[in-house]
Length: 283
Image (cartoon, rainbow, N blue to C red; front, side, top):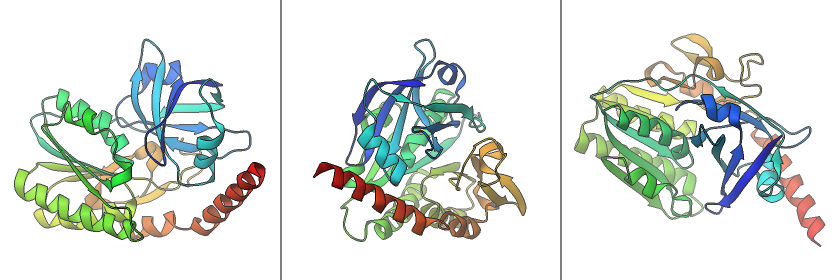
């Protein structure tokens, strides 16, 4: 079991957990992730460590509440409590290079994953232009990005009924604007697959190399279950062991979008049942 040293609500649906996990803190590198299990018989969730201390043995995990399990974590886990399991670090570390100008894009909570990577690239001698596209209530890590980025842009918009469609529009427009102003050597993006695809269609018009961190459905995180398979360059790859970052020009985005939506009805139903259960308990 892994002790929760600190729990902090960052926004209306984003929670930071500082967790005692010496084996992860000792080895994790930017670009890698862990798989956590919070409850008995609970699902396994891939999460990216955003900060860590190798000597003290802790990692910071920022979790977006988007389904039953993450909502249950938000409601039931408390500071001083425990996560049952943390497997990792998993996946491949981010690549190393220097002397480039990078446009690093985080869509909503995808910004969490870009932080350690962009920071590492800056330390290796690259110019970092960071972009956060998100509804206004979900802006996070602004000061931290401003502390090392050569330029940090926050495109925050009102959270209306059309906020998902607005996200695509803002991501596309901000990306195009920054490409024309900054002329980056490469683009890196983390976020919902549909938004990544829309941004890729802009980037490829300029012929700029682009890496994308993929978020397919994932179960075990070690390449055994095959749930996170994606088609890259006409070949089947597993995001957990071959990724999570891939060359965007080789990814079959349309297939991935279809696969990611396969269990959406079941996920919505599970969330509805859990909300009814906690509302009933409060009466």
